[in-house]
Length: 262
Image 1 (spheres, one colour):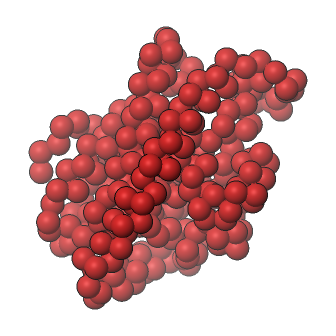
Image 2: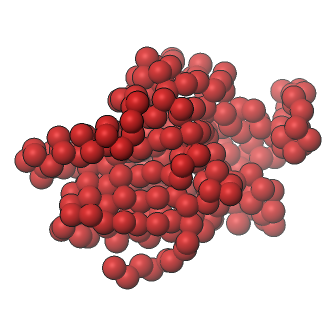
């Protein structure tokens, strides 16, 4: 299949009615830079127009689903325009994934944190390996969640619990994510669990399932778009704060940040 934006950081494999989209930056634990984000958007849009594909599996490499946004890449940004351009790419990815006319499954091994966690939450079904780790950890560097996390967390666990999870920024296990209602299944054997879930869907009248998904997606689209836009401009403001600068210094110096509330 031809792609508008080609990058080695995203792999696609099609087998029958199933497309597997793999984030492929193992050396960076699949941290999401602009090329990877654009590659994901391009591949998903290509898949969206295929009548032969009904299920999309989103996955990472062996050691990680995604460590979130690439902080090193963010530090190298030259101006506000570049930052807003990346936020636009993130928002396009989330809208594309959320409204994709396929059943989407996240298969998570290793960390799924920050933006990586947001992307997983945008899919229809999440399977977590027992070694998976989750965190909405933007707070640690003085930022807010993006990638629609405010929308998806409120939908999954309610606004009150979502606020606490965001503010705490804790890391939690696959079992804890299941207890919180943030994943659907914890797998002892990811391959077996994934095959079982795919087989379950493929024996269903899947176009009826997809139609239900599309109805919910269309109803929720204005709300999601609003949240994404609010996150974009709030994140820009957060990047100007003293606490964000301190959070970045602490991250690079591998120490605990000393926030001042400014």
